[in-house]
Length: 77
Image 1 (cartoon, rainbow, N blue to C red):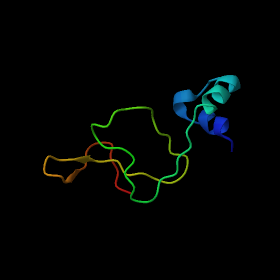
Image 2: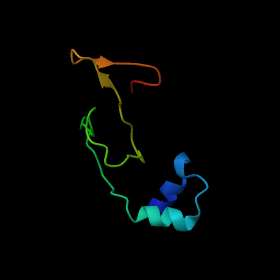
Image 3: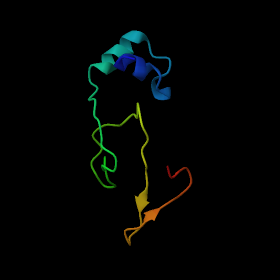
Image 4: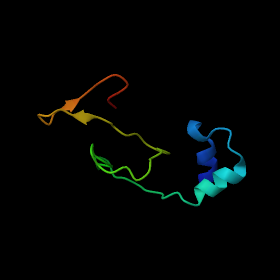
């Protein structure tokens, strides 16, 4: 599937005309991350957003003691 096709399947962009999905595809930065690689951390400047096309990610928040905290909506993979 091409990038504009992936964009069209993202709920946030559901219903956008093909031309707009194709326009968004021109600004996509395709990135591949290795297992265990940190993508971003709390406090990092938000410069965009990520969409997982393939694979899985783990999202968690560290406590002040540096331990992973699990909360509503978080699932350990």
